[in-house]
Image 1 (cartoon, rainbow, N blue to C red):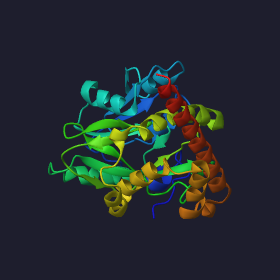
Image 2: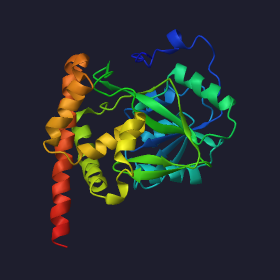
Image 3: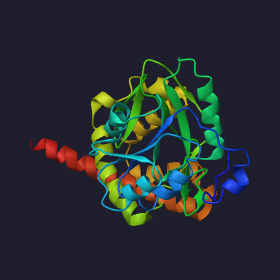
Image 4: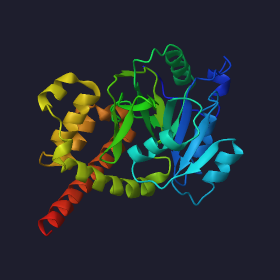
Length: 297
């Protein structure tokens, strides 16, 4: 199982004994007031020749940091993750059709960079992209169990073979071609800006998740088939069913701590489970608000 790269600032002396190659893909980093996270994110991308920052209107030093690092910066008003990533595909001056999507609180690793270079060198045109797993980190600790590793997203994609579509607070992929899965993960410092920032962000996410849960068009076409399929499809089906179960905040806590064995992550696992319980409670309150509003329309 791949380890969590604890010392990202100093990993060159330990992990980069081989000079970094230039994988044939562009990188797009989404930002909004990310002066705290962006420098380390950019530093982790050594070996990628075409890096772009797609900003949503930062008022801090995000633009200055990106420009001083020689990164191209563009600004587009954020509407959703799917819309923003598609906008980047359509409007940025990308050097390559293969695009790696990162957020500023995420980090590349030397092993993942090498794997990306390897798979893209043998691209035969049959794939729309690759799913990447994230290593979620809380207080410097990889949440191996509570973070439900490996949890995949389509992050390395061919911009002419797929589109992103919105779903809840995130996005999903849409293509007639299949996706493959990479072994090496990226690192996600999901709580790098503190608890207050996390709560504010997830209050907004909760409303988006509630709207998705109440939208019949987004229901899985075959629940049983999705549950048996495993992987990302199974996780999405479980999420759909969980949104309709009673005592959801408690069930979500139990899922993280017992089913996923989050207790094995120690104190960080307990804290993360509590945060997921709070997030589920915010989703439930948002669902009630939406239902109440619709009943008066």
